[in-house]
Image: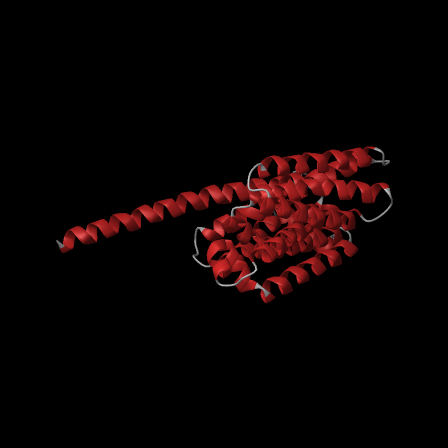
Length: 286
């Protein structure tokens, strides 16, 4: 760990990697709680994996892969949202098909591009150590879009996250905000690609929010907690993977999984203790 902090003070690529992790944590904290509460990780997974088609096409034609990822993510989000809203049966099959097709198209494009093997591994599992400055600005811009949109439409998003039918009865345009929420999920997926890659992005999107949800009852509290946990996990994963030269993305996800298990165990034990105290208090009053 001391070796990492010494290197952090000297090497700009490590400083940029740490900034990238913090920027990804903001998106993780803003959108992750909605994915967890709304229970749409499978939809988010479909969006994440179909993004490879846009990245591969952009790389093949000489454009920025993240720009292609953003276009593909938004298109995929709208297609998946349309399927979810219009097809009340068979939606899992349609989402799985889009997931597989997006991956296949992306791999075909990348296979025709020189140096495809390295790029493919970077896209699938992330490469936080190679995030250039221009992509940090791009990530910061995506964070700003997420922050402004969530701030403007926080109440409708909360309404559709917890109870679609009640929100509809209150006059909230549920379908519109649902589609917008999926677009925000798509933006968040693109934001986290450089950190953990397409394969692992759903874990980073959901696990910090799930941990935060075990300790708070409000969506705002989940957002703050998920952002803090995301920053802790990305920073710790970067530090722990540096000296042994481990892949940073998988290291971050392993830490996230361990944190979730520890948090779930602790929350369960505390709940049992509270229940036991309540029973004892009831018995003593009798």
